[in-house]
Length: 257
Ligand SMILES: Nc1ncnc2c1ncn2[C@@H]1O[C@H](COP(=O)(O)OP(=O)(O)O)[C@@H](O)[C@H]1O
Ligand SMILES: [Mg+2]
Image (tube, rainbow, N blue to C red; front, top):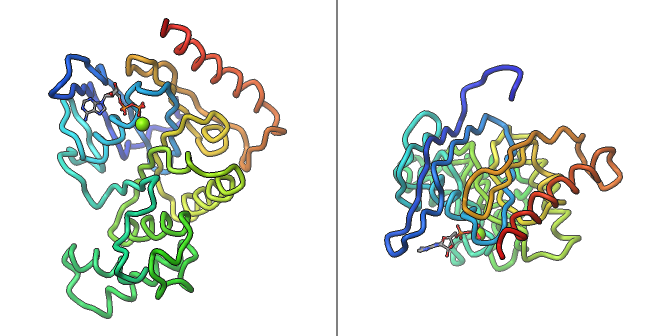
């Protein structure tokens, strides 16, 4: 599928997930490689197992099969992967922006206070929030809080951002802005992103790869999105790609009966 053979940053083989209290196999032997600097968008009908998949990658769930992140088997959450949540309450509300990051650095074993502050400030600059370093989370917008969480993850050494429908609750204008901020950070910092959405437009605007899951948790189709960024509905090829993805999702809904 790719011209050159790179080493995947995430390597998933025969991933199978069944919750203890249920007969249903949610993810039936998923195989997936994610390469450095990929922006992989995952689309699929509600309940198909998208959140389950990303929670397994994040290390929040046990599973059968193998998930390797940066060559190491995923058994629990790790500093190589950041999960950025949709609800924006992922920061300590009683700590300032900069202290949210220095606290995480201290917990990860960084002993020197000055070095912790310098590092936190460096990553706040990268997400364009240096001027807000002494603010408290409640003084920031939702998108700014997500960026603090990303800066904290990057400061800890993460190169993979995991996002589960992060912008789903936002109005269209805010969502557009947050999409371009995310793309900007991703490009500038060479991050790898796995991003779940139920929004076809969002998948096309953001992803260089789009994976569609079927209702029973299988990978239905996996494609490369070669439309040039920034993508708009006027971009040549947009309509055909949108229709193709919409048809795939409609098939899954039609099968539901
Ligand atoms: N903790 C859990 N225990 C049992 N079943 C679960 C749990 N979490 C999710 N499920 C079930 O797994 C299936 C997939 O859920 P989920 O991964 O949240 O789907 P999606 O994110 O695609 O909407 C659903 O049928 C859901 O009810
Ligand atoms: Mg979900």
